[in-house]
Length: 172
Image (cartoon, rainbow, N blue to C red):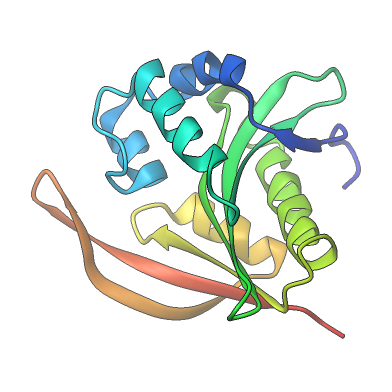
């Protein structure tokens, strides 16, 4: 990806919560990000509570994408389902100020690589709301394909959002 800085993945840290809060100040964007896992307005306490819960789980990791200078530019979660030999990506977000630079695409590519090469799963899934065409296009560029559509997945202030379930399978 010429012209795009190096992105690395690392575990999301509590100190990163403040950065995440600065990206999710809009209720609509926050809802697209978490599908009502959190309540608006998002608070540091909600994030820390969720992190503590996830620290106890052996099948979910909260990750950060960082640039070459170590600045956090994105966030996502990855859940493993070893019985189904799959992983699911969710809660994907990139710093508003860094959008449109290909960093989200690179972060998702690294997340997929992590799932295939480290978790050794055979497929990776994710969901995106149909009201978020930029994210949908990003995931398609990474190589995800639409698998199925979940009609009426969520209601947001009178709007009905469908969820597009996407999948990428390991190429052997």
